[in-house]
Image 1 (cartoon, rainbow, N blue to C red):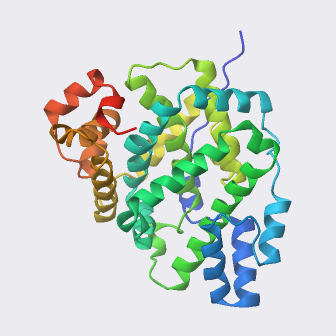
Image 2 (image 1 turned 135 degrees about the horizontal axis):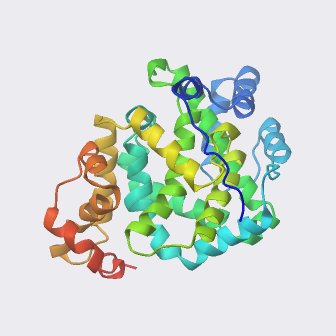
Length: 324
């Protein structure tokens, strides 16, 4: 039997520091881009980051991607493959959990939701943002894309996008550092947890208990992705126990009602309802969210209380609710 390693704690002093911390390497790229070519270049790069073009017109950006396209030292390719295989086998269910659980769960972080709301993209172009997230997930969950470098390229583009958001948000002077740095380490770690540990938790709640081996492999895959994306290793959970502890600490520190969180959630719900074919089932996306997140988080997000529908969720297949 393997000895059980002690679970790390994440004290407030550490979390406070990391809340004011961005990503030194990626932030330096944006700073130098601005210093050399001006604010227009940062905006041009931001447009490129949202495009499908492979190479940027700015060499400093291409150099950053080329120099950081490698696995972190803790990466286990066998575990990564197991995590990818797990995703592929459960692709449809995980897809629903990402939309009904992971994304709104992130919106419960009041200060982190502010920077998401500022871009207006989630509120005004929700479906497009969901499609972009889906495309990103599809790329990073295929083994061939890790072998041909496409996974690294897409992850590092997101990393630079976060750095550009940090720069532009602070540049325009509309951000209060009392909220933490825009797209800070704590919020990035919370997002990692929402897309990994919280997905596993959602599967368990839905009655589809994944094995501990598959669960740990899926967490490992996302840990690798997160480090490449610029998350500090100190916030990378070594196992599901640490993921649980980190999630509880971030939720305690950050989850509270906010106008931004409610607006983002409402936009997501409105889009989901368009994919419900039966008009009698229009309230079921809200019920799905409440069932998966629990009433406490759902109340924070202003999700309608649909008690009767929530009770029915475990008995209604997702395929009946949503268009395929």
